[in-house]
Amino acid sequence: MKPKRKKAQFLNREGETLAGLLETPESPHAYALFAHCFTCSKDIAAASRISRALAGRGIATLRFDFTGLGNSDGDFANTNFSSNVADLVAAADYLRSEYQAPGMLIGHSLGGAAVLAAAGQIAEAKAVVTIGAPSDPGHVAHLFADHMDDIHGEGSAEVHLGGRRFHIKKQFLDDISSTSLEGHVAQLKKALLIFHAPFDDTVSIDEAGRIYARAKHPKSFISLDNADHLLTKKADSEYVAATIGAWVGRYLPAPEEEKAPTRPRPAKGEVEVRDRGTGFTQEVASHRHDWTADEPAEYGGADTGPNPYEILLSALGACTSMTLRMYANRKKLELTRIQVNLVHERIHAEDCEACESESGLVDHIVKTIRIDGDLTQTQRERLLQIAERCPVNRTLHNELLIESKT
Image (cartoon, rainbow, N blue to C red; front, side, top):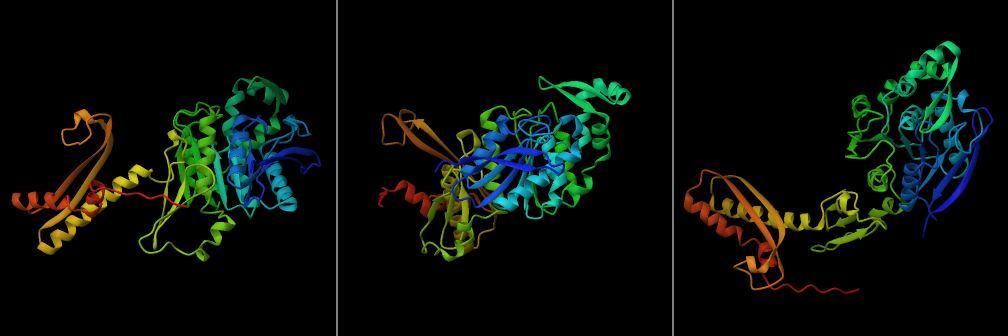
């Protein structure tokens, strides 16, 4: 069912009304709070797309306008970084009283710095995500460097940011210059996921490095390749949302996942594949093991695991190596190391002398085997012969019947 959008209103610490939107599925299993970038609003494309995508994954997400921006009351000129942090805490209080406290905090640009500072005041939050965030709020001062003399001399100045005019007061500069995130990050005690684009020309990727260095594990860093600071390309924000959804599952398990131990494991020799309801991520289980399959980001996946062909190649490679090891152990050969590299491609049948097909494309797997050890040439040749007897290799060569049923 398509997520719903609900209007939200709550009061900041000054008693002014802040406006928000809650993107929510029918039965959310967790709640998240999204903080937008400096002088932006809750309706910026990246915030909207990421919030909708997370709602589609069962995570209700509240995004709101900071004081004096968008549809929220108050005067932006009287705000500062500390008031933004207070607004975030007020938003978390609203979710706690009306729905459920946020288990995840997400911040874009200066909003990322704000969630790092606010996280310690929101005990229920188990995970924090920053996107293009500075390591300290003072970083934004470069945006109005040309007006510093006026701000310090006159007490305020009108600056142009993103095509709009804003009044910046000296108290704003004083606040960001006196605020450090170093202690907040070091004492975060929450899982941290950092997104940053290498070519971000608004906030250098060096800022992400400083955040990462200060934080303690569990922490993760993901490069956004050619994305811009505002994630204006739809594909970039969708990739961020898909990755967050996959990552945060470890820290905010869905009710169904919490009950997983009661679900019987697949029978011995059986493999079970279940999707997550959205995207391409697949949860794979055998009688004793669990793993994930996915598609890379360029094909619309979240890249949380190998793709199906990589799993197929790994099965063939593992079987080949195991067969060689079994034979070497039985024959007491001095085989120290086995490495199998595999590549799958499709080639024209007319280019394949060993193929029965005479036209069209055929699947072609190149298997390169490296064998190390004190072995004679005869032993090496025999091992290569044995490699072809691997059970998976035989299955792929034999006539194969696949039956589908419901």
